[in-house]
Image 1 (cartoon, rainbow, N blue to C red):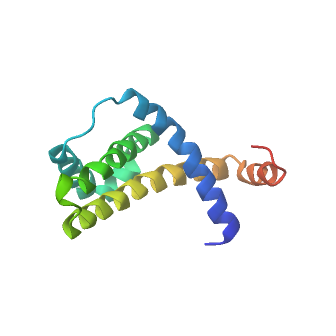
Image 2: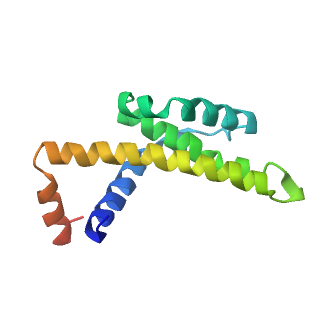
Image 3: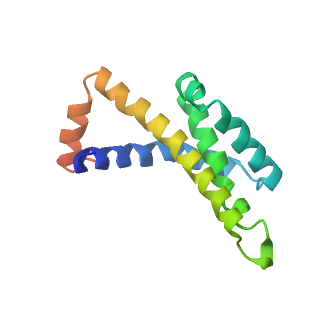
Amino acid sequence: MRKSTLLVVLGFTLTLLAPVTDYAQQQEQVPTLEQCRADNALWGSNLKDELLSLPVQRLQDRAHILNSCSPVLLNQHGKDGILQADLDEALLNSELVLTYVSAADNRARNYLLRHGEYNSFLAEDAAGKR
């Protein structure tokens, strides 16, 4: 991936995470370890079809929910410390978060391309309009 493309993708990702942050503020409850494991298992099982069929808002919501599981997965043994199995489980969770964020990001990029706005976006961004 070219550096300029990578920067655009990163920019879209940050833009797409803004609504996820709003969702995070609405969410007051920390998920349980069992809920995190259930969400990972369910949302990671039929991923290819769901990434194509779910609306962007649902992709963003799932990314946020899964992201809120990271500290839960890493701290499941409390004062006994982090075990390798915890790290492995948290890594798989993080990969799933990135998959959902990337899917939402690709939708936004494809929208700009379909509507002929991608080059305008790049030009404005290069000119410092943020």
